[in-house]
Image (cartoon, rainbow, N blue to C red; front, side):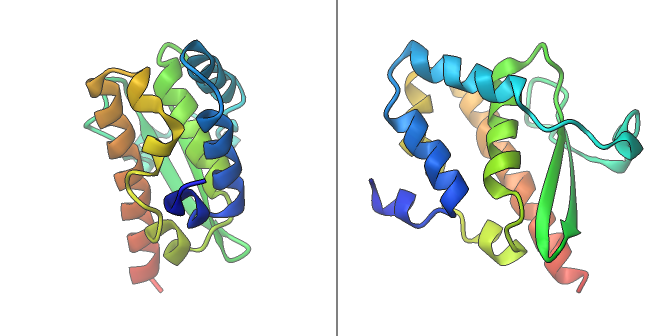
Length: 148
């Protein structure tokens, strides 16, 4: 385990470790499993992309909504099924960051996905999208902090 993985919250650390111990095509398969298990949008956000934050840096249309629940952040992503790798990474973030405080989200290393080994199986464009997703998640955490 790298020092960076040790600094991650428990659920995200588990996810990173699962990816770290998979190889090549297994990483893509795992990402697709996360894509399939992405938490659904709440009914109140269906068709409400205007109420969500767009991620312009992604080639696919990606939208994020964040809210506080029981003292922790919850992130909802709207990513088309036709973009399974981005959707899978969004699901990793949704599941791995669920319930963290804004401060914990901001403390995440921006390159933690490198420990997952995704740079070996994804194109540079997809990696840029991943970086953009995490940057937007952090921006929403900052917004939450500044509103309190």
